[in-house]
Image (cartoon, rainbow, N blue to C red):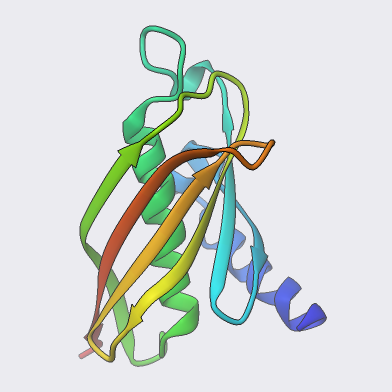
Length: 140
């Protein structure tokens, strides 16, 4: 997948220009046959007042990675993807470094897709578990 993988990551990262993903400094860093990984720096910009990563920033990261995964694994030429539900269970806090999000399919339907998105720190410790449901709608 080598060269193809790099091209996919370039397209994903280029699509972030002038979006929330750029604002949060989210970068797409790995892709496989059935997963996509992104990372986000944990800095005061994304902290809550007591100095740990804000849960909303984690959910924004998870939805960004899951939605982009739907985009690259589905027929993006004929469909557009929208997130329709997301849930998150935050299990550990993080103050600095990077948080990584890996989106993997739970269900890959023609219309709806369900994603398991695991957020981890640089030591691969679980930070949050998210589930995202996306819908593929035909372009008209």
